[in-house]
Each structure stands twice: as C-alpha cells, then as structure tokens.
Length: 93
Image 1 (cartoon, rainbow, N blue to C red):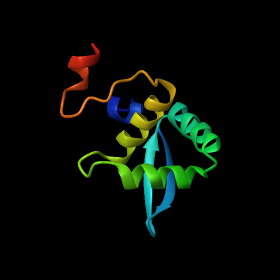
Image 2: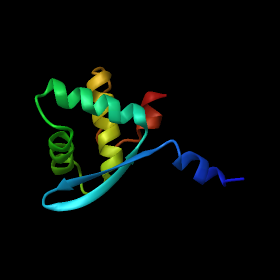
Image 3: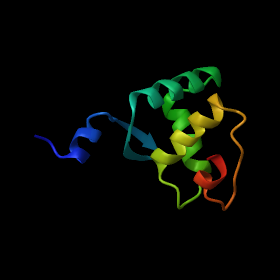
Image 4: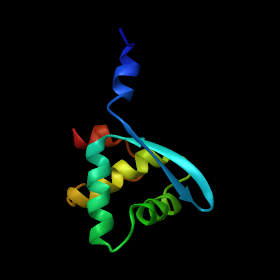
C-alpha cells in the first residue's frame, strides 16, 4: 500500500519546460494545468510563455508551482484580494 504522500503525488501531473534557457519540471494538479492552458490561450501565449512570465514575476521565496496556482486563482477568482505580507488563511477564512 502506498504511503499517503505517494498517493497524493499521483494526483499531480509533471511537465518539463524551458525557462530562461534551462529545463525545469513543475508538478501541478490536472485542473491547474487546464486553467493555465486556458489563461495562456486567452492571453495569446503558449503555456511555456505564460509559465515563463509567471516565473519571472514571482517573488524569489515563492516556489514556481505555488506561483502558478495563485495565478490561476487570480484569473478565475478576480475578487481574490492581494494580501501582502499577511497570512492568507487568516484573511480568507
């Protein structure tokens, strides 16, 4: 029987991309990949182009996978407030 962490990892889909001239892999849930593809299409970008822009704009302490999820949330939930330096859990709920 797989460990809980291994079971959760199966829900993620890994993609390899070229960002700033180097290969990187990102694992996200399929629903986030779908949302990001729709965002890229809406903005006239490739998925790699969108990920590259998000990568370039993210704070250095935020993991790329996290930045991609947040971008998807902001696109689909425009009322999501920007909370700088605050614990989002405290603010949202």
